[in-house]
Image (cartoon, rainbow, N blue to C red; front, side, top):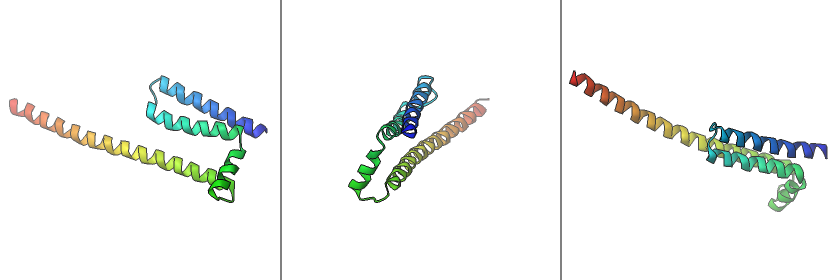
Length: 112
């Protein structure tokens, strides 16, 4: 039972940490919603650990921790995919800005 309380407290502390970072503008609100979903899952599984067994039985997975690890892997892949999309978007913006700077420099040199 102590381990369950530990995970419930861990979920609450993670949520507080994420919200504090959002409040200080160090973290995006959309990203925080994804992470808060994960911390809510940690909190709920900390309070009710039999939920993972129940869901694994519904899905047909014999070893309940495998479902937990699968959910963690999917969560990490979604975050990785979202981050990759953001990086690509920023790279495109950097290329566009560098091209605009080069054009402006050329115009300045022509005016001199």
